[in-house]
Image (cartoon, rainbow, N blue to C red; front, side):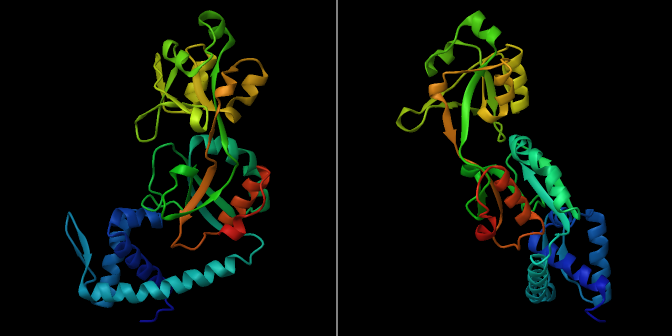
Length: 309
């Protein structure tokens, strides 16, 4: 039996992934296959090696003594292979592969959509597997290469690179609504007016943050509609259902067209930048470095991705 056998090498990588994840389901997600296919390959590997590698029950999965020893030795070798391939990919003019990215919906709209065509024109051999999701996601457990969240929500054990400057949050309303019920002048006024409530990714209600620093006010607004997406909140504001709270950059066109107005502009609030993050223990996947640089270039920021990565 030779390690140069491609099938054997692939099966050994499957085995190491299962041991590292301690879960057939999570290993299957990372490798992009079904759990049944993973189970079949593991049984085949154990048959070929003539050694039981894993103890499996309905509730647990642990390596045997022989399996633990094999996994620890393979981890070093496979990591060396990954490092070598990653180093090689950094010298390519055109990275190749699939980049799995989980991003906030607002980030997908504001910073990814404008650069996607240029990204694929420059790197035609790249495939972007994008999931736009406002829920809190463990990107490692769910098999993503990187995530995009606001800077203050990036896990501490991740490497983060800012993609934008600070984000400006504002209160908006339709001219018809303002004419009908009046214009709020201070945060407390919103307590007496219909507002579009916001539900965060963890299913909690969000208190609007108005102002900055020592003048920051948190307002627990109420209204006829509670939304968990910016699109829904903006649409409700356009319909005159209530005032909404969102990133100023999300409604630039609607404000310019006169369909919405920014109320209490002196109470706008600065928030953290959109930040891309990825596990520090992993090599940067092909295409991520280039995506970061392109976004920062589009946002008018310097190309710091290479230094940060």
